[in-house]
Image 1 (cartoon, rainbow over the protein chains, first blue to last red):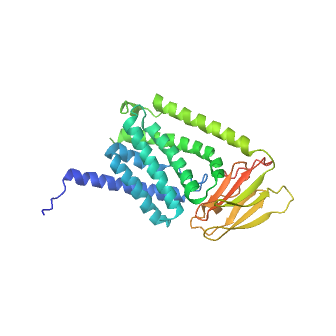
Image 2 (image 1 turned 180 degrees about the vertical axis):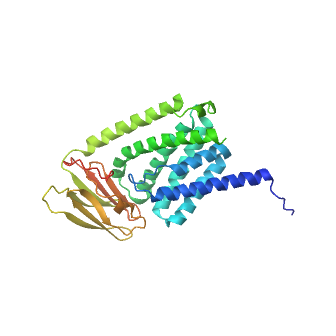
Image 3 (image 1 turned 180 degrees about the horizontal axis):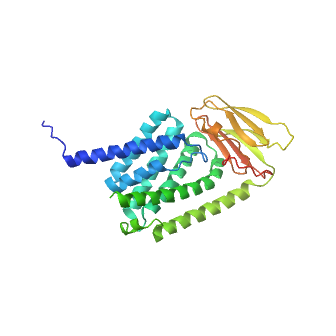
Length: 170
Length: 135
């Protein structure tokens, strides 16, 4: 079996993905240290990196980045395999999936709309996960509207930021 | 179309339709839940997973505060209910997000400790407009 050296293009792609992963993990840790604006609400900056990865490197790289970011981030925070980790993972995978679907099938939707949908999907997935697996009380959903409003606002702002970055770093 | 839309930070027409749809759905859900939750005197309900452990009225000025120990999956979560609202004062969970979230008194507010599977919800009409989230 002959091992072939990866091409420079391939190495460059891997290096870019790793740089994005490091950025996503850093933002994940930063967000975890912020004071809470509500149960399970985060500004979604780490999802912004997932969106940029989708734009620059495609769906596979984006999903892989989202999953790896949650695992490594939880390892550093000390929540690996806890309910917080499960919620985080459910949110990240849902957000990435919605991003990919909107990106592939809705060309009229820009990064702002994709980010908004992903933020809403992230929040909904967290609530459904908690209600299904940990606290089986429908009363949980009473807190959902204000948190969805915050998600909608942060999703729009993150999308605008993603557009700004994407326009300058093609 | 997507590349052209990079020039703007205001989104496309499709983005604005999505935003409007989301805001409408949120507003309708919020009004419905508020109407459902805001009737009757203000009270805090404490749950462990599926089980309702206790329900207490929120104390008014001059009334004694209430302390409750809720046995969760990891151990005991201590809950205090006083004039400021309901709050979890100690919890065996790692992140302590439930403790850090402070006191809640508005109808529809909740404190959830997911690792310990404890949920505290507020329902009913509260006299004091105290915003625990902005505290």
